[in-house]
Length: 86
Image (cartoon, rainbow, N blue to C red; front, top):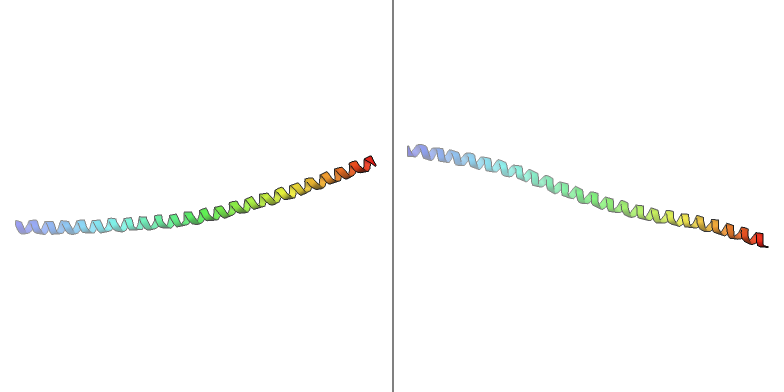
């Protein structure tokens, strides 16, 4: 009887050890995937920041072009008014 209990206990411990190892392997896979996703997230975030900076630069350039256009238009109007006054 004692021998049978010892054998069952050893077998049960082996099964538990195997199950524990399988669970830990599964968690390792999850942790690796989370780490990879975090790295991808940071790369996407950095890329988005660069795009935002480029858009801001483009908006500044567009604003400057619009202001130049308005300035040229105002100059033309002033010249026309001066011509009419003379």
